[in-house]
Image 1 (cartoon, rainbow, N blue to C red):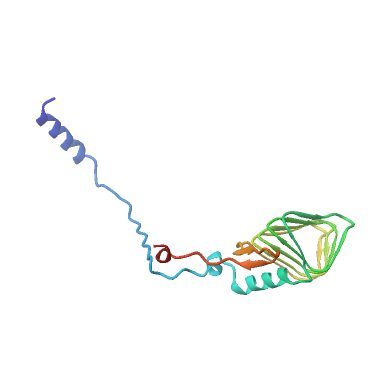
Image 2 (cartoon, one colour):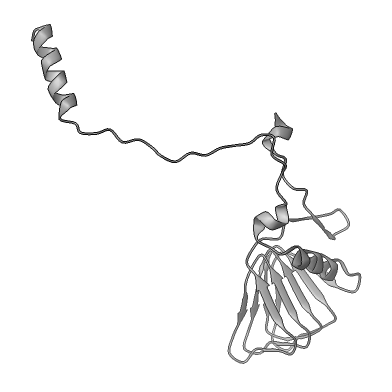
Length: 165
């Protein structure tokens, strides 16, 4: 094929291609912008984070990390807190339950005499489960970390691009 024919063929292909379309969205990063509040970024109200830290870190709260099951016929006296795990209650809890970044499953024989607060997870109540106090759950993860002494502390907010650069 001669050069002239190749150029003519290329011209026909381009002419018949129609209008070109490109990406029309634009994302602007401002490296000088201040870092956002990690609590607001998660969708968790600041008051709830303070409450969950106070309840979990209370010296009278029995605290565990990971999964926990209280079987039918068993009883737990006092406040109970769990971090990062699924808590299954089939027995009796005489106190409040606080679950941070985990789920709470209340079986049909479960009875809780206090209130229930779950942050970063969900509450599941089987038919027959009884909670004498209120039940609140917030699916947004709590921005917390476990300290060396077993209490929870608020995680530091992430650094902005301006701080990193």
